[in-house]
Length: 177
Image (cartoon, helix red, strand yellow):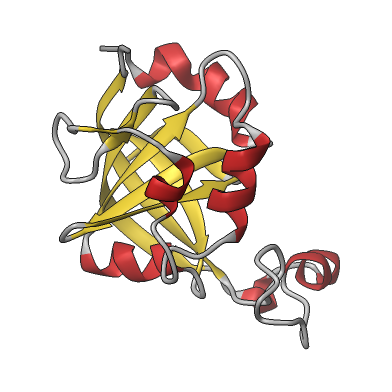
């Protein structure tokens, strides 16, 4: 067991270039790369805030099961293979976990499994969600991250808005191999 406070700096360093956000509904487990996130305290609770575009399969899964796991690599960053598959391919069309050969680990509290190969794990239960309001952003941010008329299959800038998912960290640990 590790506390969020003990690993906050490590999570911060690894969020960019990417960490994994994993969801589960029934027997369907999906993971995606996220590069935006915050670990901190709000409402006197430890939380991880993840940002997910409304066009993502992960967004659909979070609507059905308000639990998720955040997985952070320990020594290195995510491999280029994980970044490519989990960051650019959709779980609607294939099983990314199987394609990447990732090992799912039984969770401690939530229904979503951890990933052995990306061992630093935050199990989260949704407290609140908020869709971002594009008209409240400065023009340069809207143009860069939410451009109009972009190909909807462009996974990095499809124009769909992000929703902030505030997950209470209900368990945090390092998966032992």
